[in-house]
Length: 124
Image (tube, rainbow, N blue to C red):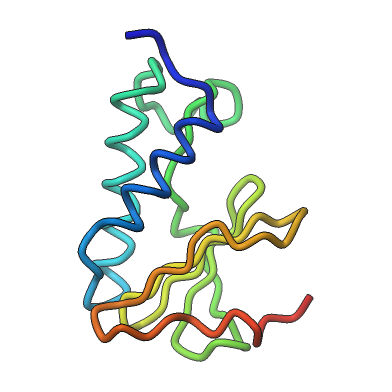
């Protein structure tokens, strides 16, 4: 099977992540997001995982811990800055992904308690 374009892989990732059972907490949500993205990329990118080549290999990688910051507008939420996206993971397992330049919400997934992140509280 030929590799899929990045936009197609992103759509598959968002669909799979959205369809997955909700997470109970931050760590479970981060693991769910990472596993889902890595599985999609392993299946459809045609590029072996090598984070050292993240800037040039065309593969998407999960958000990295060194890019994590507390989100003051959403207490208990960590925001991860990635190339082109902000990924928010809440203490109750919520996951939201925003496209930086457009401000478009790509995903807002509730945690196991059914509560979504209140993205309207974000600045900008």
